[in-house]
Every structure is written in structure tokens, then in C-alpha cells.
Length: 163
Image 1 (cartoon, rainbow, N blue to C red):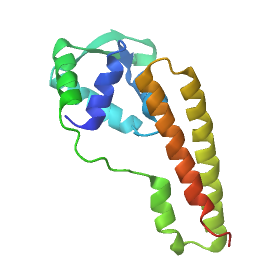
Image 2 (image 1 turned 90 degrees about the vertical axis):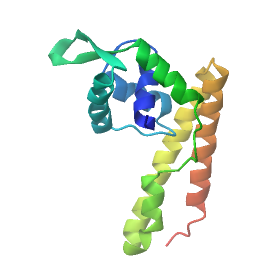
Image 3 (image 1 turned 180 degrees about the vertical axis):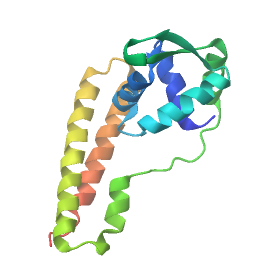
């Protein structure tokens, strides 16, 4: 099972949800460390259904379709949770842009850094709020990690000389 499928099964542990609700829930729960796009969600849901890990639930407004975690889905998710995770790979579009920033003009590089700083500052603020709101020790630890990640990214940006 891939990590995106596992992320969706984890979200469905909270109850039935539509694709749109899963996209929003993914951003809210793990947007600071694991991105899930709308296209990934809508590509993964039919595959999960075909494998019997989710089933169709109630039809919602504007033809939205709920998905419900099945017993097989719960079992598969638990198996994924307890399996070897393998190496973590950071996937940051911002850092990829910074690595290739030499292809930009000085003004474009400054804009890239300014936009990244604003984004990471917002992420830091959201992570601080999530840390305060977290009741579960695991959720709190993940929120603290998100804070540390945002702080590290801001520190990286601070090392870039102003042109």
C-alpha cells in the first residue's frame, strides 16, 4: 500500500467522508509534513474501492460521494501502520526551487525567498496553534515537529544573502 492510500484510510478511521472532505482533512491533519493533492485523492479512492478497502457510502449534495472504511480497509491500514516504514524522503517544492534559483534573476530570487519566508511563517503560526490545541500526545509531537520544520526552513532562508 502506498503512503497516500494509507493516509486516506487513516482519515476514514474518523468516519465516512467525501473526496473533498478527505482533501481538506489531509491538509489539516498532515499538511505540514505530507502533501496529498486533490488529484491523488480522486485517483486513489477508486483503487481502494476496487480492493475492497473502502465502500461507497451515502450520496451527498452536488453528486458528492461518501466513502466508508471497510473491515478489510481497517486491517490493511493496521498492517501498514505496523510494517517497516523505510527511509523518509523530504519533498519540498520550495527547496527544489531554491536549489535551482541560479536560473532566476536577482529580483526573481528575492521574490522566491520572500514568498517562501511568508509561507513558512504561516506554517509556523499554524503549527504553534496546533501544538496548543493538541490533546493527544502523538498529535502534539507531530505539531511540534511541524514547528521545528518551519523554523529550520526559516533559518535556511535567513542564510541566503540578500542580493
